[in-house]
Image (cartoon, rainbow, N blue to C red; front, side, top):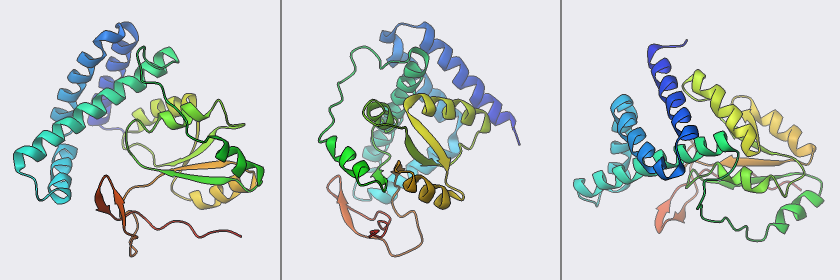
Length: 223
């Protein structure tokens, strides 16, 4: 069901997309700042959720330190969204972007040469949408990305078109296992962004950003 909140979010995104298309890139930070302010005012539920998550993740920090970290997170993601919109509008990365260097990309071809496909696991860290964009020039077919639909179905239409442009072929999480197995049989690469503690089983323990972390257990090895 399309709600008024969905329409407001959608109108905001279209307005921002138009501004990104029309404005010189030097104004991108200003647009990101505007987006930052608007999102915090409109989506107060997630704002409270971010605050609570930071309290749970960093109990040793003072409240002012966690608040400062929260503001940095919002500025970071606001800038990433404007970067996504710039790339979607202009079909290229913004001028002055930091070059991306692939380390040992031949390993991907080694996996494909085995003829059984492969699974790439990363995290929701940095500008993760750049991963398929960078790899699409060296892979024979688009990455298969597993995702869930956006909460806003109007925005989902834009996001799905953007991800297709970036080099992803999306399959949705619900009922995805059969599709993943079929794509592996077709020697495709599956791309997963793994959240921590995402399944109700005893998690594995590892280190991430110098902190003990509990990611989901890896898939069993196929022989």
